[in-house]
Image 1 (cartoon, rainbow, N blue to C red):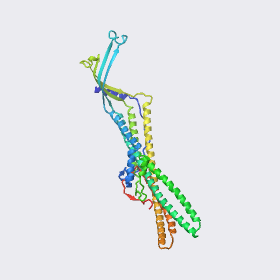
Image 2 (cartoon, helix red, strand yellow; image 1 turned 135 degrees about the vertical axis):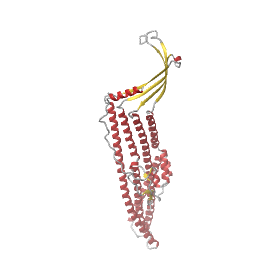
Image 3 (cartoon, rainbow, N blue to C red; image 1 turned 90 degrees about the horizontal axis):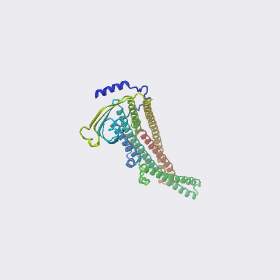
Image 4 (cartoon, rainbow, N blue to C red; image 1 turned 120 degrees about the vertical axis):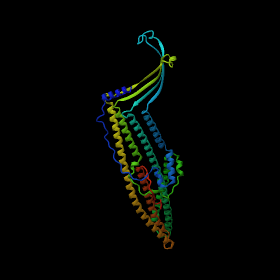
Length: 465
């Protein structure tokens, strides 16, 4: 038997006419930057040392439908890989049939057998095994396993996007709360100024013009406070939605306007190779390459070994009696000779799909490097702006202290103190905006990199300080 299989195999190899020459992939993967030695931390939010933020992200990752869908896709890919892996092994089936048949008297068998009615029974145990000499089934399994890895990376990408979105809304809520606190202070100061000016105007020490100016400023501040109150509610609603909770869940989030989160001092931008969407696309390339290998194996002969043992009889009563035994064994061969170009078209399509996967990967890498570099440029600029603004705040604080000292000594009334307070509060508002922008750019960099390395953070300047 095995000599017959060898003969069939040799004949098939010599006579096969399907040709895959001239078909190949064209795209090339672009290289990634050299990787940093920093240890990667996928739970990047831990670097901010904010327990409330960590709890909010944990709730979102547990309840989000997007995350559950992504995990279900991983399970689906794993089951499909199991199906592909099963094709590498043999199959063993039990089959039975019972047929009542009438033979034609004008057919192959003459009367009295022709024209008679009888029962035909059969019970067999069937074995089949496909020889994977060309690696078709192994390539299909490799493609399925690569898809499993791709869906796992896509789950990590969904996790990253969701966690960054929660952090963005959370820090925006904190920033808006800090702006609200400063706006309330400015409103109080302007109302006090207006009161003093009214007293001075009543005594004939000043005109009505300054009062009109401060009255206009008070109206503007009340408008800003109303707008910030609206933003506070919208921020809380956004966080609740991201957590998969009712909108009332956002009401429980407390604001810490005097305690800014910690920021990493240095973030290396050469870690984009750990970005989940880049990993996922790399796995898609691997899957596309394996599918092309499987398609190329179709150009070669396919040989199966089949065997069957069991019982067969005319009349069901004798089916399991001695003498009803039957057995068959032998190879089956499929030889592609002419298919009107179907095999070449299939392989060409698989190579084109591989090229698409490679170019999509290249596009993702270029976008990641662009986003990471843009965030780094903005962070560097914002740090310089923050330092300059802090110098302004320090100077105005000194001016306010001097005015307070003159008031305490009885050299001035309280008006210069209030007048010195307003520029200081305006400068603090600017500082809050710069801190908020730094956080936003840090989160953009985190998303561009796919997380954060385990690096020691430093304390940022507190909101409103």
